[in-house]
Image (tube, rainbow, N blue to C red; front, side):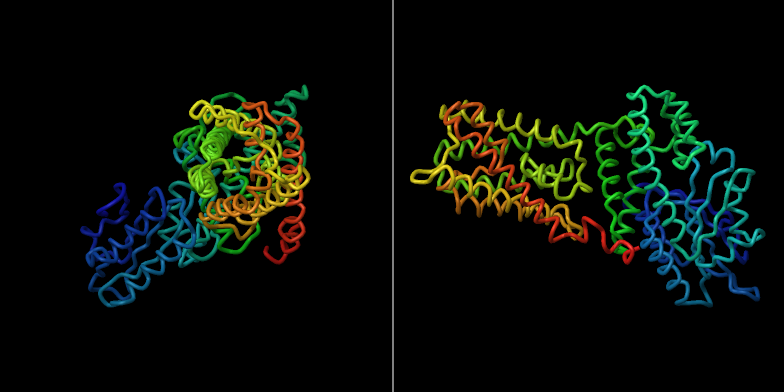
Length: 497
């Protein structure tokens, strides 16, 4: 049907070539994303035969398009509008199109049994309420058996909106449920008994009732809905929330965890396997990024490169661009601490010690590789004619600046572009030129500890530099919480909702 992209399958309930005189045609689609639906809509709009109307009949003939794709609501609305405009341009010769978004839920077993839940929006919502309409009768084919449900939700796009939010809630339930069940198991509680108790209490959820006892605790992980589908739906929900201006820290965290799981498990894994997911890719990313950062610092300092600040800032930028979407692109225990203290809704506090550990290990490896290549052991110490106290102040102030910039450009509500690596990298460049002669401008405990671990020189300055860097990150977090108070305490939640 299209020149590019995956092949599209569609079902004509009444094939147009054989039914030119039929007053209503019905088409059902279910394709990967709204992008393919949009391509198909373009094909239909540009093919006069597909919308050609019969020449006789008292009422204007219609094309009813039922789209069962889990789509992106704003694009669904745009597709419906595109079809309406095309069919209205030549009303005498073209059919009227009625677009219905019918997102379904219930898995393969529900589809086979005809008991799917259909979440439906339509350009003509009355078609869903009318049990005898052709659209409703078609939807009843997969949702009409006892146990199935059809919900008319309003105008076109409503079905896709509810489906995306539904699956965002599914992801959150799976993630929270897995943490809760592991906690209970480690506390010596019988998990099955706990689920039975919760099932009659206020924590009861459909996921705890169904997915956990049937697919997770049995270790089968065989529900039949893959990680790629879950990730797409959660992403659609997040985009919808952001488009409506909703403050959504929980959904953003769920999105990050779903992306982490997708990277670990692969797109074809059953979505229930998210309960097994680890954050190994994020930890490895922090290790690699910190290694390259400290390796670059070591080479520049050992070889006394005049443009060391530019080189160091550049490697930090590219590492953030390369792996920021995986781990957040901290590569610095001070940044990790600052983010955890300043905006914990964007970063799991439990990850702090592991992030710091792998960053320090990456720093030691980077310093060791630098020494192996240059045979020069660099030192962390104040510059000539500068006291330890002045070095402390310099490191504290600019570590605060670095962590503060990260908090604002990478974790705040209005952070949304992919250029924050530039701001962070240029902060390091600016700091290096400003305080390089005073303290060396390390700003990073992974650099400090990595260098000390390899050189064993000037050990007396370890506490000075580490103290300054950690205090600077704490001050950055405090400042961020003051100036971004509405984000931390969500004073505008009621207004946004």
